[in-house]
Image 1 (cartoon, each protein chain N blue to C red):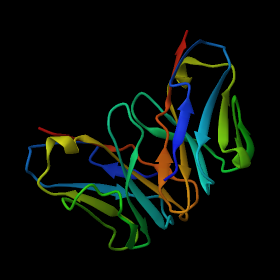
Image 2 (image 1 turned 120 degrees about the vertical axis):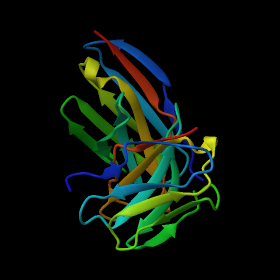
Image 3 (image 1 turned 135 degrees about the horizontal axis):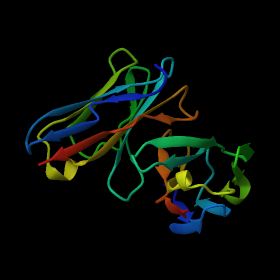
Length: 108
Length: 113
């Protein structure tokens, strides 16, 4: 099955810093989503991005499907950005395969 | 409804008991998924419904786990003879179609004591 690797596993930044989170996957995908899991456990949709580039405020994402990776950019970090960021991909079936996540801590 | 709703939010049960977890998906979403998340890990797929039928139940860990979606909307995940290892957060998601963007509920935290 598809393997998903996220890096870095942990990231600690000062408020205002920028960051790049990476997701590598081992096969072609029909679905790729980025989620933010807040400290209360809720999974919040950030991007549905099987290919191309999208932006939403301080966040943007790029997926290069031919090279099997996706990047999530967070600019001007705020303490509310803290939490775990997950990349999840779907292949020929409808399951989402998840990476282990990047735990982000933004210090004030 | 506006989002995916799961009830209860928390469930504590004794080992060996039967539990039911409910998911109310976004109105009009034909695809519904159940996932399970243990502490410090990403969610793990359990089962996928397209309409009323379970299109893929390959993630159910054993025959103590069963899920239904009789009218193509609300789904119930049923766990028989619960074990302490079943303790986890059970997440439900729905999407417009199989490959479309999935939206998750807040989860049910199951604790088996």
